[in-house]
Image (cartoon, rainbow, N blue to C red; front, side):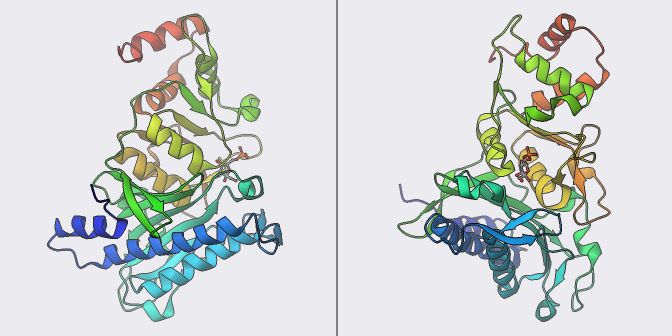
Length: 350
Ligand code: P6P
């Protein structure tokens, strides 16, 4: 059967919406183009010293910036400015949002993390680009404003990521399910490889930086203790790559939960609401999973700052419900296990 390319898939889906003008389709195609260029530059990273290594710069987050972060940021900014459908962007690598003076009439703003997990580049671990798209709320014909960006996650019109790993894959949603496209380098096209992705309701892996255990909130400690408990089950496997896109992608396909709680070093959580947690939460809910900050649905958090951080618990529906349920549980481990078994794991598939 002939493969369907990303561009063809977008066109087919646009036909389902007679009112569609093609602007969002054009924007998504340009994001696809930008990610192909980033993928090309990344694949050279192991070969070209000029690219590898630190840019000896510190970004707005106070983190050491690798040259590829800057390259990826510039590629995305240029592609989106040329797109014609984007009136401005916000990026992990930019202190403030960037209004495109020559695109005042464009309908969309895009927020992105150009190269999430970039500290993994020189150890050849997977990294990713994460993007979130909103329709502007300011008047077309004028420069975009901060309010165009500071919208709650449930207002996103599209979100997705590109994971640069053993192969390169683009995964996105416009609110009608989640679809994955694998890059075929022989034709330079993303091809539909994972139609209608759904996350299993439960699983046997969890993903957290165990090194922060002692500063986890009590319910997270209880959840981790449960995952490791062997009283009446095998311990669950811990999988943690240290690259959110990679950890999220594994769980999206196979089930599991990714957790980045507030910790002593990151009292508000480490991950960014606007261009990491919101897009991933949109995808996860579209794939029948859940995403919370421990007390609130991620997509309902009202943002106040572009780079604000949040705790995040995201993945299989039953795991997230169990974790939140532990907020109210103050019983001992054995009773805790019975509580969990009766409440959650009566499901025969486990
Ligand atoms: P830690 C990468 O730097 C990142 O922003 C995410 O991609 C990743 O999930 C997290 O930080 C890892 O943080 O503190 O466990 O190294």
